[in-house]
Image (cartoon, rainbow, N blue to C red; front, side):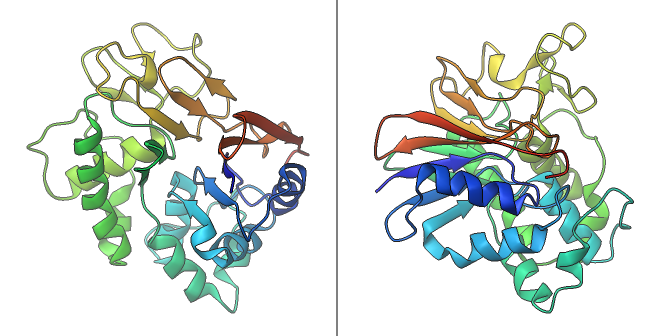
Length: 273
């Protein structure tokens, strides 16, 4: 059995199938992990959801910010944007099944046997693994309940600093933002959501979340996506970035995590898939 993790698909179903052919994915024995953002950007979001959901326990995905945006639009809590390309989900005959499956996805997945964590964007540097899992479970309970009130409160960059005393929608919003939008942090612990360029493009004193010296998960294996301008990333501290910008005409990338030599695999993509 092999375990592969795959970066942000974003509705690029054809690219996903080509990547699976390249790694010779066997649904009878192999397992796939997805870094979230299954939808939006490419033309076949509904087919991506059907495919991943249809794999059952052979696939694990976490929620990304685009997945949550789809849920908010579907709940009527936020308008459809001109750039959104998930109308195929909203208009599908199996819409309710797809949305129910999506809202039950976790924000964080921990394979305890391999001791690898899967998230969409990152793990807040102040959280150790126990705190990260506890916070994820708190927000997941709200999202999976289908509470439309949450989606109306989901958008926004504040609060931008973690405190154990956060409560209500502020607490849930911060947790969701941390897992699905994190890129850069300030040394004092504040999170910046404005800068999206690669490391080195940000103004001082911002630093990538995984480079914070006091990061509590340093040394833990964390697989993530979200940061297309970071691209494929692997460092000695255990983090693996897999969003290589398929939507933008670059690549869709997988990594074999178990069941063979750890190795990256990529296929080229067309802009907009």
